[in-house]
Length: 237
Image 1 (cartoon, rainbow, N blue to C red):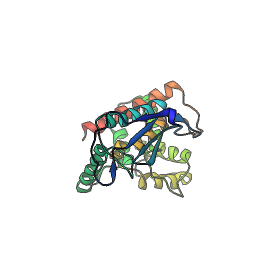
Image 2: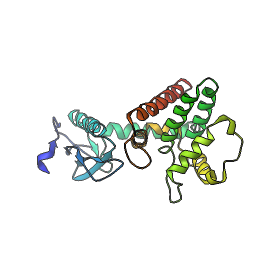
Image 3: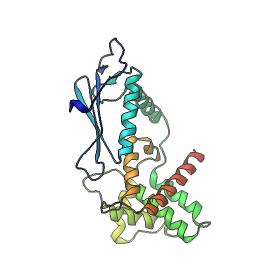
Image 4: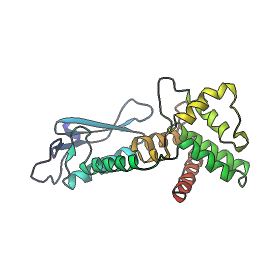
């Protein structure tokens, strides 16, 4: 393993505050036997191993570059989480701001309103592309638990529920459980800023329910649907 090690470059002399360390060692990205996130990045902070698994090699290398840059800046890393001090501080500030802010709009309600606004002016093929893309993202934007419905049912429930003509109607019996989960266990839109959540979003855009890679055009269509929706979210604040 030592041949893959990247010693901390330009580490300053000095002491880190309690719970942090300047002793950081970073290893190269490796591929592991995992279907969803097969690329693993490992590093050591103050003798404690941290790791992250990501969906693509590019994402893993990008995260490795971020950690390496923090090392070059001479940042101390938090031993418990393995994260650079600047990231820990930013997360704490974001959490404090979120606690003071009003409740965030949730993903399903955002999608329902967004699609309703575009429905009348969109061709059938465009409607299909929007619904398919945002349904894929919805699988990453629900909290998972012991009784989480199957992904195929969550997708079907989402596709049914965002059709404006179905608003106010009871879902079909076979989709009722998935619909209730989708509308009560969905994440706030702001959770897209969470790196782990967004990694799962990227995976959902790229893969089918059976774990096989989606066609290139399917991925582009889904990515376009998400990008347009996020542009609307930013414009609507």
